[in-house]
Length: 399
Image (cartoon, rainbow, N blue to C red; front, side):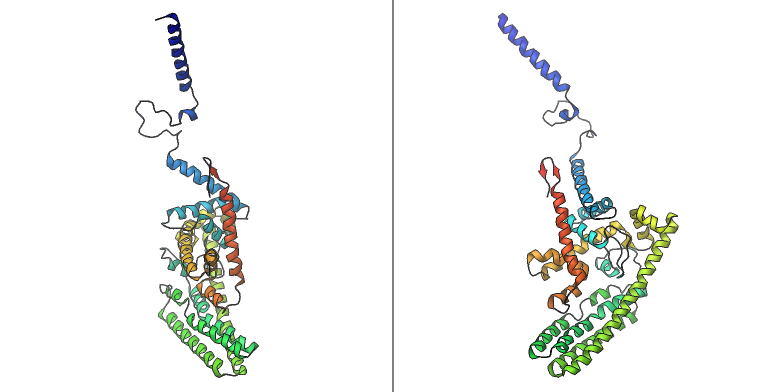
């Protein structure tokens, strides 16, 4: 071999040794790249320095949750990190689920993250669930139900046909002509169709109510039917004066039932709040107001076992997934256009089908709270979606 060849071989060997040496001295991040697998036995467990696919996915989820929590924090949401985490977990554990951003929009609209709240309608917790709604979703657990709640629920449902009668008769009282009577008859047909709307919800309370309770419901249903049939006769042949007398009587009965509903549910609310606060003060050895601010999620799970399952953030997040899915299916049947489904879903969650259906046919002229709610929820969901769109992982934008 000539001298030149020997020099060439030496140079190649030196270069190979240099690159091999520098590769072994690379940074840990470079060593982790899957470009080269040395022929050695790998340990049974992966190195803690190299994340598994599951861990990488979890890291991605953590980024999403932080972004959502940060956006909710700008919207005056209490404990946004905990709220986002519990909603996300419930969504991922469900077979089917609405989007996390829609779930969070509903939760935000209901309580702004104050998960221990009790409303004047007897609704409790993160999702503001009533005993009827919890029974509808067949969730197991303790529910605080008293005679006041039962009385209020019965009055709430059974007064609605009387409200319909008032609305219809008032049309004729305000302007009595053939066109108005024709419109009144059309609305009366809708009122007849919706007369028993919501009564199936009262059946869900049978675990807590007596036979006497349901006897009273049947009697009220019969009275409502007689009232609507009387209105039918008056629209056919009655004078304006007779329609006015009927309207005033129906209105008086409606207002009496509404007062009974409001008073009964107010007593129920105050009793549940008092029990909640007494139990928190005793269990945590500090004022209930302090517990609700500093340890709400811990307090929620304690109250769920000791008083009412609806206080549990985890249980209510799971309930929200189920109940919103139910409302979404109903909304698809009621929405006039596909683009209206989300607004209709929100309206049904807030106002209930008995109110929303009446609004759609014209028996209820306006539902201010529900109409604001059905605009607010999609707007919040879009805001959260925009925040999510800013999350970038491995160069891929998440939407």
